[in-house]
Image (cartoon, rainbow, N blue to C red; front, side):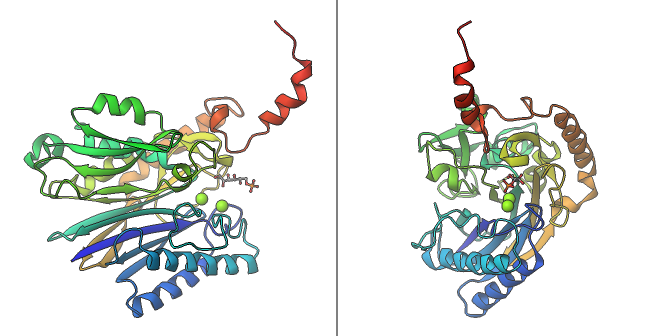
Length: 369
Ligand code: F6R
Ligand code: MG
Ligand code: MG
């Protein structure tokens, strides 16, 4: 029997501003999912949070894109919105773009990452949640986990990993996708995924010779808004991702290692700035300094017949203290640029901008040089 893991997330109200999820929102989600579990609609669940995003981690046997599962998540977000409205939380219901649920949550605002697979003898999974950034923030770490031998020693010394991996990449501007095979096409792939505001890694599959079959995705990143509304800028996504680990896949430590480097991502204040991605525990994921810096939380689980054994809140470990310090130093350095690039994003990537209005206002004052 196959297990499906669905990570579905939305910001349905922040407290205060865009900083965190109010305990009352966590409570309503917890109650509704406990009921769904009791009624056997899902096998298990965990209610997580990262910044102002409410994250539902669901295990079930219904496959990806399942109507019942998506509608359960939608109902939780709707109920959360009602609570948020009562408490006048900030941006109540902001990620629910439509009033009517059509059977699939994709394109309706919330972010989704799902994997379906037969559980192995032991099945460690890591659920990542990010806030104040977009799906492109996963490009560098996912590339490093599955394709960089300086990050993942297994690519060199585990014979079952020698066949490499395949990466499904979305072009969010033209609404098309392509698959690259590493290590053979590593340089070409990097030429694309290095442009992380346009090309985003969606899924990773094992290459030939792996213990996991080649058609079974082992990593999935949420890319909802960007990919749904191709060609139109619709803001930052605050993405999530699920990664399976060990036994021919990157070990848990190899999955986590890329996050020891606080790389620069797009997002932060008003979704319009570059800043370091800071790994932290769920409780520390409260972006306050200039609404940031951007955060990433990693929750580790072992699956036992669909039961989510865990979570283990990984970045609470002291081993990431140094990365957090470094992220704070980089945040300080970037902040000193104020409204100048590269702290502020280039014009086309700005989430909020009054530049078109200013261009209009001053257009007659420009003269030929
Ligand atoms: C970034 C984010 C915040 C807001 C900022 C302004 O993703 O959510 O930085 O952009 O707090 O918010 P508004 O325009 O709602 O006042
Ligand atoms: Mg918000
Ligand atoms: Mg958010």
